[in-house]
Length: 204
Picture 1: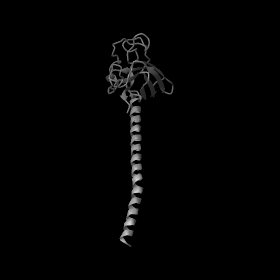
Picture 2: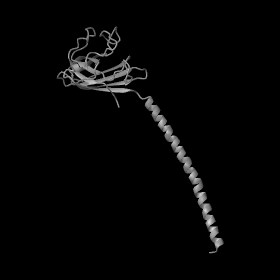
Picture 3: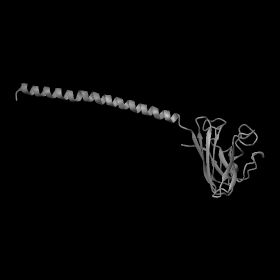
Picture 4: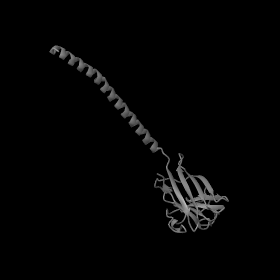
């Protein structure tokens, strides 16, 4: 092979390599940029969804005063700024039982006395929610069937979750009492002993 022929083939090879790699490299760079932009958009969407996610909290209820009550209370901040409570219990005696939020998130005492009194930051009289004066922690009576199961759903105005204000329900205790609340007797509606207790904690 002559030197001229060798140079010709080298030239053709170099041109072919440039044609193959040039556009391919550019396309790869554009594709990578597109992928980066998509990823950033997805991240922005995820952050936006996180910012608008509902605030939620939960209390796991356990028996107190020798009872075997169990259950859960879930709390969800609504778009209207209220809090939806969904309470479900098992192994509770048939009939009506008072439910309150108490000031201390502490269920360590056997009779749940460690939870303190009703949550009442405004120092109001005890009563029925929505009628005259009532404590921030006043809720309602829970009705339990013969199977020992009861549930209560309420949307409460004046509560919040995790904002550190006087309306914040976190680290309060959900207390279920042995008797119904008469909504009149001070300071707690003559509801009897505390048969279940659970601390409200932010859901993760």
